[in-house]
Length: 91
Figure (cartoon, rainbow, N blue to C red):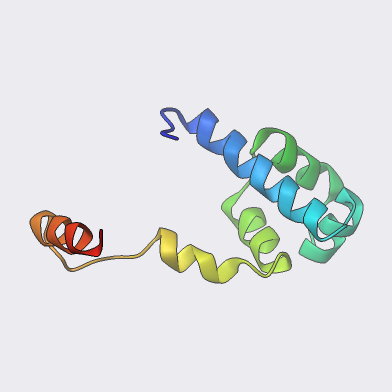
């Protein structure tokens, strides 16, 4: 699925955070305490995807998912054509 606006990305992040919380069988209050952020802030993040980067990282840490950020922010030294060939070879 391609996302085109920041709001679509925010809502997708919010949905994933909510799903992960539910998977761990935690309430919003328990999750906010575990992440050390106010309940109202956590609820806003989960409902709208709106919040600070600091709060988002606290949530990732509380969910034991902070290591996944390295995948998202991965910097590659490959040129675009090298990346293409690498991906083509993996198929």
